[in-house]
Image (cartoon, rainbow, N blue to C red):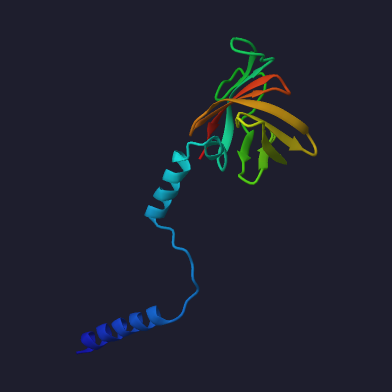
Length: 161
């Protein structure tokens, strides 16, 4: 009898608690995460592929003027790099803001926008570092290759979750 009474009390308590008003809070489910990732990686527009992702440098060529030119100065994981860009990362946001982290890991806020109508050339501006003009040569869900027109460099970047 005591077990039956305890079970009934537990059931009544659960019902009462579930009926009490509570603050509304979005519940993150496995399905929500999967839907978000599906949307994140299936937006095939240039803007959709570029924004909201953390990009890290994979390879950098200086003195780049076109295919077959430039000097390799950085390759992620290589012990013989001339420059160390392991901490460099960039995030482009939909609203035109850009988060940049330099080779020391220091944060620099930027703004960015596409130049022209083809969504392949863009300009990034920083009050401390000035303006940079670049052209996107390759962009998919996991790779971004940019010809830095201001510094004459080729930056191959990869998506870092």
